[in-house]
Length: 240
Image (tube, rainbow, N blue to C red; front, side):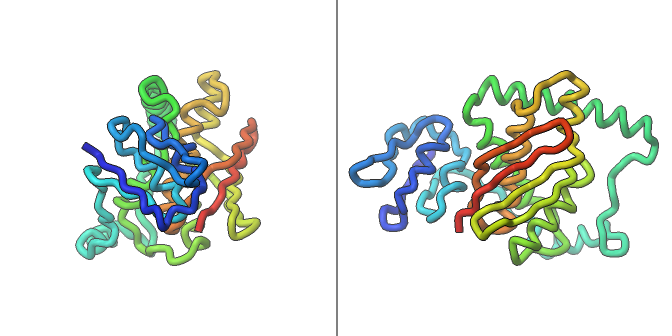
């Protein structure tokens, strides 16, 4: 069974955990200005509450966490053998027809997975995307570990392309903006006649924030998403 501990001294009373929890494990006590765990058995270990907590005041026992394999010297040495002039070898089919067929097949699979998640998890869908992004960040061998937010943004831009060509910016120390131009999800939605903003979009934008939050060692929360036929813009708040 998963147990949840809240550090009362560290908690800043922001109520973000109560807002984001998909199964309503928490109730925010307005008098004490702190969250209270009222449905511990409903926790399924998505970790969205601890991910969003700006004070790192929430801890879980009974949840198996993935190891950060990219920090392992053996994994790094093995991954370095795949480098060509300092960059990984691209795993993209050279034949255009084969590439388009592969992308179409991948798109159908992604839509099916997203639909299943939506039906089974409902409001927990963003948490699935976030934890998937964190898992990628922890397990993907990296040839350089980012030390600043700027380096983390540059790495995300490189690793998410060309499926998602993004232009990140930081208007302030508390805000990130992602302008997504070429987008595999947008092309797939257009091809299949699916309205933008559905479960696949929700999974992707939270996947991105989960990945970036882990690589930059910050707490991120998507606050606004403007989606269009030519570009999408995601507004993300940074919690230090």
